[in-house]
Image: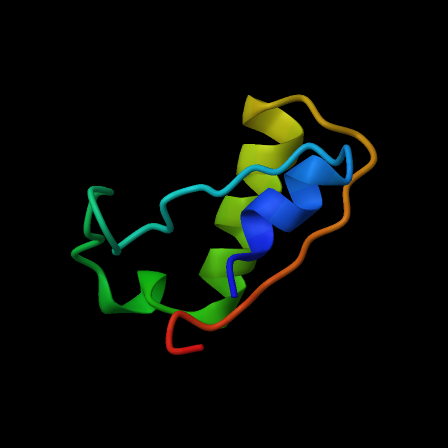
Length: 65
């Protein structure tokens, strides 16, 4: 079930970044960059630093759903 249109139609701003190491994004060479902690930091940096957002709700889903 497509979730993005449902959320957007409800008036929410939906941002779906291409996660580091997937899709067209860069692939980190350092094995330590492939961790949950690094993923959280990339999402935090993207939302708060790059997009300058201050009030967010982060929703995650598995790609296998």
